Image (cartoon, rainbow, N blue to C red; front, side):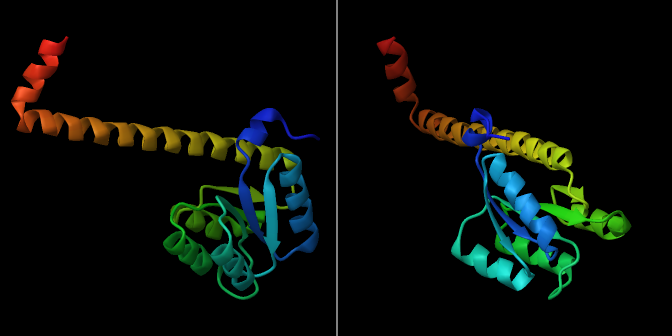
Length: 167
């Protein structure tokens, strides 16, 4: 399936930290088909090394990591990379850990086995979320500029009179 123009405009750098080779490669391949850059790591330690050397917007993280408790890893990621969005990869039997991960800052989850439809839905939800976050950031930035200008006018009312006279 070729990447659409919309997907290319919202291309993301994505890291997958997953122990199951088949799932990891299928997920990476599908994300690439959607127009994203995807890299993979087998362990949390390997994932952290990659994160320390490259910028990623999104992390798919297995709840069953061999070298660290996944919830501890999630906490480390959110502390080190607070803007990183995390999608939990889990099985149905991981429901308690999945809920805990969601309360700790994961934005979404997908269940094994791989469902391209569910990955696509998750990516679309995240795209919408990140678009809204960007719009909020732009509004806050504009608001800050307006507040600064308003403060300057309040401090020097003659500027207001000069500006009005110019009209």
